[in-house]
Length: 171
Image 1 (cartoon, rainbow, N blue to C red):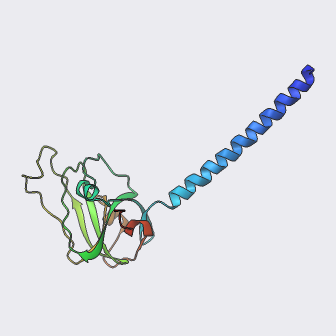
Image 2 (image 1 turned 120 degrees about the vertical axis):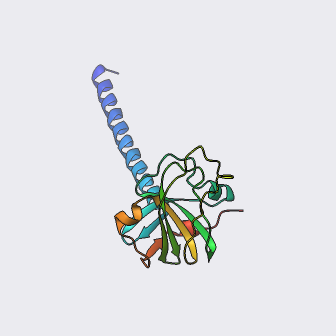
Image 3 (image 1 turned 180 degrees about the vertical axis):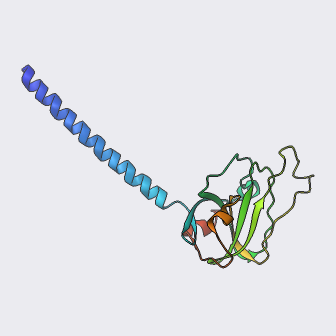
């Protein structure tokens, strides 16, 4: 093989490699968008909140406890099989939150600007306050404190919940 044909072969190989890299990059972007679009969300008015769903008893008990913060467009969702007045507390929390109480497709109540306790408090002996909705709810959404006020959410606002939020945990 002469040097000239070797260079042509190397050039063709580089072109194929570049095309393959572009194709793989496009595929990765498409998969990332697909995964992002299927992530659980709760939409109140036109505001979309990406949520992590607390499904197991352990996840529900821990909630956002132990975390240092929460992104402004993120939250944690707690779905309940039947509407009720579940109690929430701020054990292990390092930041303040709002809780949006939802029943069906409507906001029914808010618990706003709930203050996190000092970290040295033992939640089992400190007598932390409990927060409940004023009327039955089948979904609770925890978001960073001030979100409800900043976004102008009100009782009665329409809510869209992605199906994966209300899907029960596997046995």
